[in-house]
Length: 425
Image (cartoon, rainbow, N blue to C red):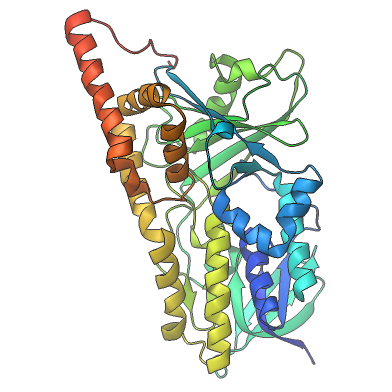
């Protein structure tokens, strides 16, 4: 049987897979990009597109169009509520920042990036699930069966098919189950708080997870709750936590007016912290399939897109050299580890610290309230991966928090007071 031949086949057309396809197609490579569902299709996500991801969208020509069409909303005013109820709200509209975080629904974003890859020359096949992948042990070429039995071959294969990556798991490259989970519910109409673009909410027994709410460009609210490993809450607690914030949290619940239409909760697994091995002979894993999600924030779009650029560059060079051995492709793992993978370790340490000492979030919120815009700007750049997590321990961030620790100790010893009463159970 004659099969179509490609340089690279990519399974999964989310931001990681589609961005890999875009960079490869721009380099003149023949690429086929498979997506299980037809576009437009939804994806459970917080919909926050941080500055690092926007760089790729701008190169593709996607970002200007989304802004012009009113499908991207900048998050200029927002903040977080600590476990003890300390509210820290900042407004970056008057502060010089490189780019604001944008809220873009994944139903829109993913299709736009996939269509950009197609315009660059990739063969996009949405609504075409991959049913089988096999590698010829002799020449290393992959045979991919998809859709209704259609077959193609490729010199390299990329798995970008999510946290449960059927492709990577079938090859034994990714093992174990995802350990984090995210809920989501869109809320239509009846919004009480008009001047806030986004907020995060913490609760002692949810840490290191959290809940968050973002205002979308179409006026909807996106509410999410994240369960992260290392704390007392597990996946079985997700629905209870999700409902509690919307029903009982004094700030989160205040966003939603009486009569608002709240979507039923949906959830998805997250593979966080990066896998130990994202490469093999003729094979790479990108995005959620490689666990390229921050263990502190649950954010993964920008890491998937950064890794996609690295994966495309590695494959392009390997194809030029006619060397797609695991020895050569290991440089992809080294590249993304150097770029952001090692910072995930800092995220894990900080998550563990906050889980053990949630009071630090209360004191950080107090410091943010007192210091204002520049503190918020620096904090935001760290939390959105513009700067490494180790920057949290630099004087500009650390010293205001230490000052709050001293203030709090003085209040407790000499006044018998504290920052605020608890809002969680």
